Length: 410
Ligand SMILES: Cc1ncc(COP(=O)(O)O)c(C=O)c1O
View 1: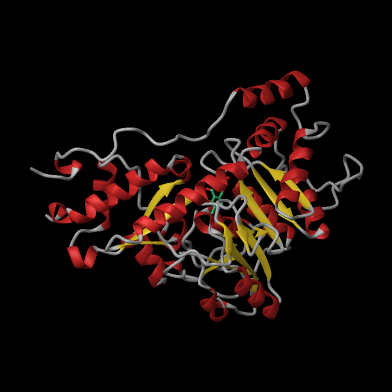
View 2: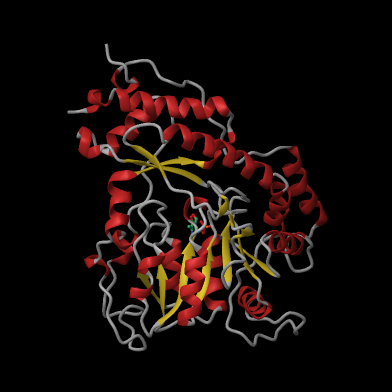
């Protein structure tokens, strides 16, 4: 008889894992309080302001500016740095589309640099060769919640007079050498979208240690007004990127649990990595010893057994799901998404201010391709909020699939 659940054998796990978001009556009360106050708008309300101050301080930053989502947080961050027409921004292709679409949105050009095969973050040793006289910034995306090598990235930026934007959408509370992400570059952008480790369904914030960048971000998010300026005075080109009081009320309440949840994810993930690293053909992503806290928005491990076993990752993932472990394969390289099939003669990539032409479909960044097409296996953050037994179920299921992998051959 088959042993694997996908072939009719018994499952390792019948029970579900913790779902997300986790909420209680206090979240409902926070919303009702805003509703009854009649102050639903950040102008005149108190919740957005309170959250901006608390979250900025939490990140070690001076200023926070709440916006409707993480995509717009990146757009506001880029605009606050003055990035626009004719500028290049270096970015990883192993990320959510917004890391690069935000660059196009401000009429600048994303330049993709390959990832480190062991961390899946941008490979700093490949950044310098991508720098040109058009490069204005490096976007450090802390993918899955693992901080990028910020020592190397900030050193390159300093040497070439570039700005650093941190895309912290997946990295609430993550730390590099004891400092929280968001405060390590010039400006940081977070998302509070439904899946994120801190969520209000939708939401985002721009944080910075620089008063100048913070004030520009504030103006841009508030239709070009200046703080304490007249209501109909709009000296800056901005838009309406304001958050509602309801979102901030939920965030203030949810934030109380963030550190405890992050600690739980770290404890469980480290244990899981210990167990998975003993299984042939499986390798957890490397965690640099300078990473003092990982946010583990996604727990990623590498499936390295295709060549030896002839079984592709897709079958391994199907088999693991059948054992009761929810997992998936994750991203495709961003430059392969339909939206990068851009007319090379149109703005921004064919813009006369830019003076060059970029054709993304010719790109082939080897480490990113391998991670996306063959190796990466994702387990989402709420699964890590379970207990030791839950982690053992995951490791037992991976062990079971790997020791019976011959059942998956065609
Ligand atoms: C790395 C990264 N950047 C940016 C974003 C955009 O955030 P949002 O979905 O809130 O617009 C996300 C969200 O999925 C993300 O994962």
